[in-house]
Length: 331
Image: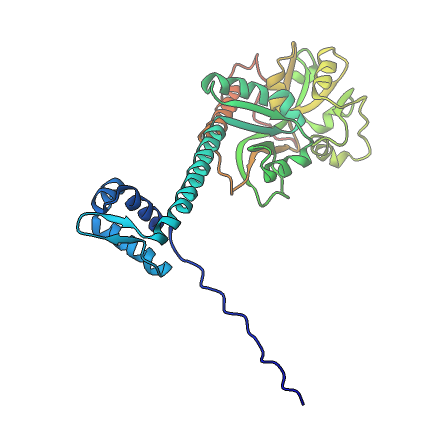
């Protein structure tokens, strides 16, 4: 029987180098200066600490990188071979770090906001205008996607924050409360209901109603108010835009149920808001942000300005904003 050839085994892989960036930078500095003392001064290290870094690199690589004399250090052949590669690495790193710094600076001067269509059409533009007067160097952008798309835009980083009603499905995002909004009756100031301190939902059944159509974030809240009167809700007008509903109210063709902020921002002539009660319907307006991408200083300032803006609206004279009276009890 023929003797089988000896089995050959591949040589074991060499151990990967564990050289650190500090060791490599120390090597490059000593090679450039030709002196431990001068290089240590430039790197703000003690000569002994720098010498240990270079010695540690030599021990890691298993070669001597410098010939040491009493006057000067000179590169060995392995040292001369290594130096261009190390120098190129630090050039690439410095370029990358500069790019990251520039990106960070650009990010500090840009703020992308997404808001639900209703908020984007009524409230957010006035908040942005006031913010821009205080932060003129910040470039603001606004998107008005459907409500259900806002959380995804925040997650993907396409926007820095999303302004919308609280989203119970977005538990992975941080929600910062901006204010609590209450649904109001919008009617002409001359309407009999305008004289009441508050209006029950049942009082609206005999009125010509202009409601935002199904599919909006507002409509389910309106239907919640009429829940105990199921089957008796028959609006005269169903519209896509809040501005259209306010126009119908202003013309005396209907009354409407709208968020307080929409009425406060509309400034429609002769239109007032009366708190709706029995039941009181409120909702949280929040700013959604991604925890892994903390807001910049400009983003934090925007949220603070948003809250201040809402507080200022609430304290303006009743002639300019909807009335916010305490709901009386109903038997």
